[in-house]
Every structure is written in C-alpha cells, then in structure tokens.
Image (cartoon, rainbow, N blue to C red):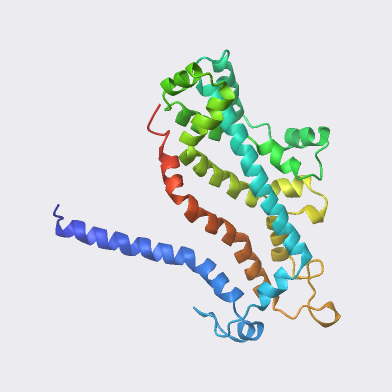
Length: 291
C-alpha cells in the first residue's frame, strides 16, 4: 500500500507528537524513580539529573525497616487479594445468573441492576449502612460494599451470553448441577474476562483511599495509599518506628523517602500486568462484539 507525500508527512509528525507527549507524561515518574535511588547529599546538592549521580538505597532501607510501612503494605495486599477474589466470584456468579434466559424474574434483576447504575445513592447512605452493620473500623467495610459493580456485572453478562447453551445442556444430560457447570465449564471458558476484570478489581483495591479514610479510624489498619498521602502532605516522614538515627531523627532527605514510597506503591501493580497482558487484551474485547 503506497502513501502520498502529504500522508507520510502527517504520519511522521503524528508519531513525533505522540512520542513527545509520551516522554513528557513519563518523565515525572522517571524522575521519581531516579530520585529514590539517589543519596541524600547528592539530591540536595545537585540539579535534576537523568540518572543517579550517587546511587543509594538508603530511602528504601529506611522505609522497609519501619513496621508502619510494612504493615500498610500488608493491609493493601490483603485488600487486593481477598477483595479481588471475592469480587470476581460474586460478580461472575451474579452475571452468570442474569445471563441465563431460564432464570425466573431475570428482567426484574437486570432492571434493578441498571437502576443502581444510573442512580447512585451517595456517600451518606453507604456510610449509614456500613455503620448499622457494625463494619466501622474494619477492612470488611472496604471489601463488602464494593463486591459487585453494576457496570462490571453487565459487561461480564455480555461475555457470558456468548457461551453456547449447548455446553450447559450437555452437562445437564451428564448429571452436572448449576454449581459444577459454573465452576468447571463457565469459569474456565471465561479466563480472559476474569483476568481483565481481576486486574481492574486489584488496581481498585490496591489504590483504595477515600473509603479507607471514611471508614477506618485506626491508623494501624491504613492501607498503603492512605499512609502515602499522609507522608506526602506532611513535612515529617517519621512513620511509626521509622526514626532511623540518633535521637530518632531522620537522616534521609524527606523528599527521597516520599519518592521511594511512591515507587513501592506503584511497582506491584506494574509487575502483575505483564502476566495478565495476553488474557487482558482478549478480555477487554470479548463480549463487546458478541451477544
């Protein structure tokens, strides 16, 4: 396929513009990474550099030696793992239910689901419900209210609609019940969709901030994002037993500690994505062009 001279000029200009935009967008995060691996003396005495002029792990040693930061990492990991698994199971089960035409009252369930999608009750009703169920200051206050999303349920339902009914009919003839069909036939066939939405759920739980501030009063239960926000807005980076140095005074530049904390909070999700990339690409497209 041949391109005209003007089309070639447009393509080159387009690629150059997108490259510049991409570099400008990535530079702040790259600078944070470089700064987190720079020594305090080099950081305070040097201008912005594209590489660590004096490589140091002192910021990471400082952060990872604190029980408060490690505890917040454990809380975020617990929320991401448990919350993602429960959200996938509940959302997939509900979506499978409303995708089966044999379900009695199926249209009513779908209508109620769409109503919750269009009309959000707001913060106060959610807060009162969490309070009445005795979930305040509990990690379940973050997990349970977000187990199912109307939008995600509708998307997964669309994917389930593409699974042939003949597979279920054959399984029924062989004596399988609904639970066995769901876990041994439907879920294995839905791995691309499960991987895609599992990544969405994991990112959401890992980045939990507002609900944690709203429902958790004990700072020992703070997830990583809340602790990170406290570090970023505060002039002090003494977290818990983090005071490394004589007299409890921090010897590491606070800005470097904040940069290292941002990197630690970001890297886990970036490490998970490559393992799900193949299924993620399929899961995003499947269900949008079928059913």
